[in-house]
Length: 439
View: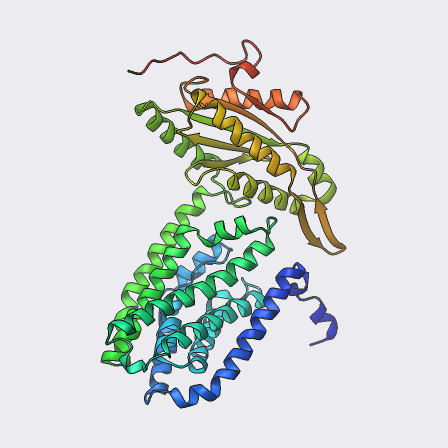
């Protein structure tokens, strides 16, 4: 390939920390695989060729059987996600030494790239994904290799090693993938890393897939390689179940920020307020508007603006609880519902959260690589208006009206400030909610 073509590869546009991680991981995968070959030759089971062929074939068959599902998953969500092939790659790690298990990974992922990823995923990302799985397989194989593999599924110590191998596989694969995701984003801190790493659905799916891989390995080891075929039907069903969940999530999530979109937020917030009314609880509602965001778009372009929105969304999400509802209302406006806040009808807690968000946004520094170097956006501020339930409104629409008007009061006060409740709203601008008394 001409030298000029190499310099135009998309991989060179990645931020330096991301590029460094990619190269190190790929080098480690190559080195560990090569170094495991001599020892692996002495540990190969007698039917190693059949086991490898069955695992690669099963991986190909499961991909082909779910080809439409996998392609739809990639179209509906371009972010990295669990592809379920770890059923077969973990089984390889449990049954084979590291070098042979890595060969199974290469066979399965070469087919996955050719049939699903090609044209939709850059080659450097496919190579990195394969390298992380190779390292995960090497780690899991090292654990299961501590005992004779024939006895691995026939004793409690063997079961403990299988569980340890599952944890080793998940730790290596998930930590490396999440590290690159975080380094590619605007917030490169430990809190963001831990938040992405512990996302419930992806972690649960990963462990479910690895558990199926352990069961497949156990059946193949005890009864023969042909029993891998019994894993295919439930795996295909799992593919379709994951797609339904992913489509449901895509329909409720804002693509630029990962927050709830306006429609989904309205539905969930209204449900939360009805629950608060039944239990006589308080709640707080915040409306946030990024100050002078149009200047960012005009000066740097909408691509940089999208990175800024994602950074602000991450900052807001980091300052609220897991069960608080955070949404994007479009443009540069965000909304937060804080159920069951305590003290002063929810005002104190809401103001405290709003001030934390305001301070965190002011500290954001967004770096976006472009053709001329790196664009740096900082000095961001946000104006926040708030309302409390039931003091400022009897339903969601009234709370939004009060909070939105309070937010504009914060704008008039000079921006980068917080205004809360009806006392921040000009007289007559909002109809006060009727006071209700709970026994």
